[in-house]
Image 1 (cartoon, rainbow, N blue to C red):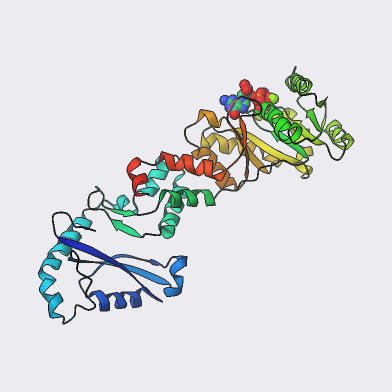
Image 2: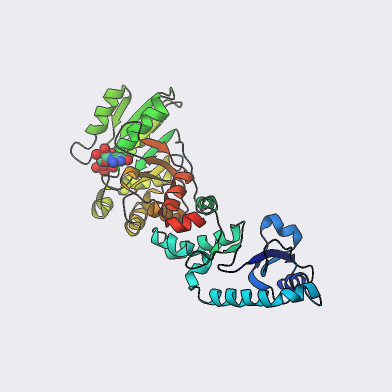
Length: 372
Ligand SMILES: Nc1nc2c(ncn2[C@@H]2O[C@H](COP(=O)(O)OP(=O)(O)OP(=O)(O)O)[C@@H](O)[C@H]2O)c(=O)[nH]1
Ligand SMILES: [Mg+2]
């Protein structure tokens, strides 16, 4: 690593030992007292066999020369000391000018700016630093200078590792969620993808019968697809319709979307029924375009259904999946499917961690991605 305007180069080397103190002692024995401590950290898993602690030290040296075995009392090395000391003085002065956030490459700040909630951004940045295979890098050409040389894939992998994905649906599946979230459209997409195209006999049930015309949309779709359809007036009737279905049939249940007031007035029986029937695979349908704070309220409002998965629609309308990510991670709920538009069934795909992680990494500033 060249030091700008100087023929000296910075030789960077890691030393491992059981304690930081021992690792430092070993480093100073080999590099001498002038070596500059760049980093002390827990050794990464792949180097753990070398010692629990890793220290990384830098020492300025001439281009093309090998690092001295020992500088103490070595006349050849001593003759270089003037130049080396100059370089280290420059380096130390430079490092003192670095703004604090740049010391972690700005990953935490960039994640916050990409919409990740602060605590999560801090944890991800910290984990990325531990995951980073190349340790800290001094970048003389870059304002801000010291970066954690995590690769884009290391950042994406850390983001993805916090997510859970469980696509596929149960034999009896219900979609619940706020008004207009895309429940009916998604149910029909699932009927085609998981029912008809998979060669499974499929039944559609609408529990959306309190609203005038609520069940008609699904009835019309069922007629077009040529699958059986039933509208049920109560939770008890829903239970009977499920029992009446042949055991190999896929049963897909559409439910009405209620706001907070109607939910408590009209939604209680259905919520009681679904929350007790954990054999029914209940997905909470939400739109990716909803702000994170609102998503939180919607998840709370629909907790009475005890959904086990989150299904997000309208990914086609958003740049960032930050709120989808934060909500799924904070609720520790798996993602099932993503709605990507209005086309049936093309615009539905199994949820993937990669899609979410890549969308977030794309939000990071270009210079960070370049380092990353
Ligand atoms: N752009 C986009 N539009 C979608 C998506 N999914 C559904 N929609 C549209 O959203 C609108 C509402 O969809 P519905 O399926 O009727 O929503 P719902 O949750 O059943 O609504 P209610 O029954 O009124 O609660 C329709 O115009 C759909 O075509 C999606 O992934 N992307
Ligand atoms: Mg509907």
